[in-house]
Image (tube, rainbow, N blue to C red; front, side):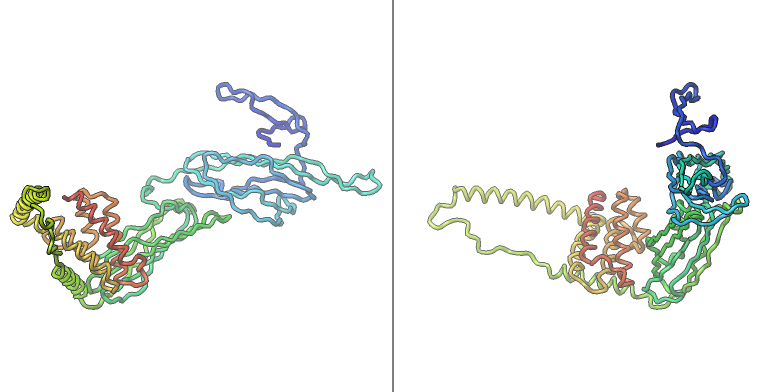
Length: 478
């Protein structure tokens, strides 16, 4: 039996059912229920919030617990709060009873419901009652000759409890990433690295509270350190003290120059619900020393250029020789074959004339000639790299892409970074999904070039992706 509204009248539990509503007032009809409302001291049903005053957006735990000092055969929840307009997450409650003192007496305590609530609306929040049906043992009857266990059903419900929800202060509200209690730690895999090798940089943000707005931090790194999309690990566990969260961001950094560089400290701002104020934490800064030769990148570029031109040199056209145009002892002039040859000659002449005009236009325009050569070299280069399983193939592919973009986008100098390539493509109205795919291919190439464990895609698969991207760019820039 589901009890929605309860009232006590002359010692009986009354079930109130909504009948009509006028001007926001419920008119109810009343009917008597057989279960009697329990009014003794052997059983209590309590609604216990962890805090009576919380901030908007702050998670807090509410416990509905049953206290017993007598034997109970059964306890059934017949009506539970719905928590409308709130974020409610139920915790797996413990199965065993525990002892607890209440009003000077010892009781066995059973948790009927444990829930973590969160609300964004400041004001007064009323926690609705929970109702249970108890099958309680009655005291022994002195008139019984033999002691017999007797049970009777009673209804027990918790009292409504008010929680005050305070608004967050306006100061720094827009930059606060979390509400609760948090800390931030950063670390680098090593402080010294050779040029061409990668460095793992980790950011760990852990704590207890509302961490739904935490996102990967924006890194302000020296230009000599290339940074790639982080690997994100998120762990969240619901506990009686609230949600415990752990965000781990792993960045791969690749130096493109030698020297001493500093990874600056990060700032993380959250609202401390215990102290009632905003807190800004600063992580440690890290110094990186990069050693090695600056010529490794230029050597890889020279290898790629030689490979492209070698393929161009070895490419020859097929010539068909010895074709028979007519059968012997058959008149050729005026025949059907004669007119077909004349027609083909006119078509060939027209095509040759149009092509010669096109070549003249290309020759007169160095910009068009440069674009055409970029397309040709990109095609030869992709064909060569597809069949190359060496460690240099990934570096060659990245250089090919950047060289092609430099020529195709009419750049005076070669594009050298992924960020620069993305900016130039967006300025030429290239679709953002195409730009993101290009950025992903370059990131895969750079990662695979510097760390073998990062090679998730083979070189053929990356070449196929590159062909699709270059075709998309050609459609827009042509």
